Length: 214
Image 1: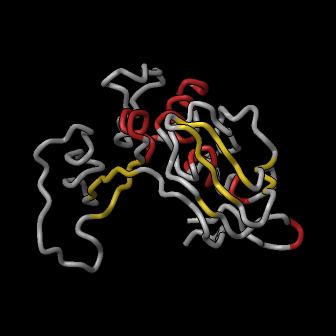
Image 2 (image 1 turned 90 degrees about the vertical axis):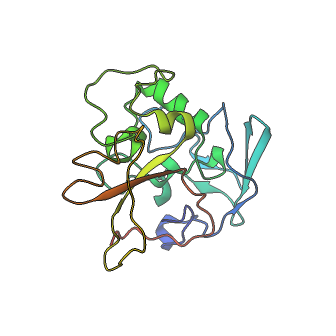
């Protein structure tokens, strides 16, 4: 994944190349909203060298060893494609460069579920779980984004078996609460067998930036 603070050229400096995450992800009720979210109607145009935000346990901080970061011009905060997402959509400075359920829920409420974060392909429990424009309550068990809203988990579809590998075990669906593993289009029995795993965005720090997608 991309690094938030590259040094690409003299034209886009300052773009620091190194970031030190000082704490784990924060369940922050107060967010430093940044581009890449339709709910980011207001945001700071820059990040301070030491960014500190409140969370349920106190505060969390990130330290940028190269100083000030201009969020309005830094590639980490700019859309790289057509879906409206940026790296910062899932890697929020206010959440120590990851994302928290509190952040997700606030963005869901502010955008009525239209934030790019909730794209069905990986922001829903299963890509075909979103069947209408109805905005479910966060607490509704039928909410197709329940794993993202309550656990900040993104769906990752992995081919099964992996290409070029003969697995030493099989995967069988016994209980499918997300209705994706046994889905005839997106699951293990589809024409392109896939197993869905769900995980929180990893903290992005101290990585080189690359805008090329292989």
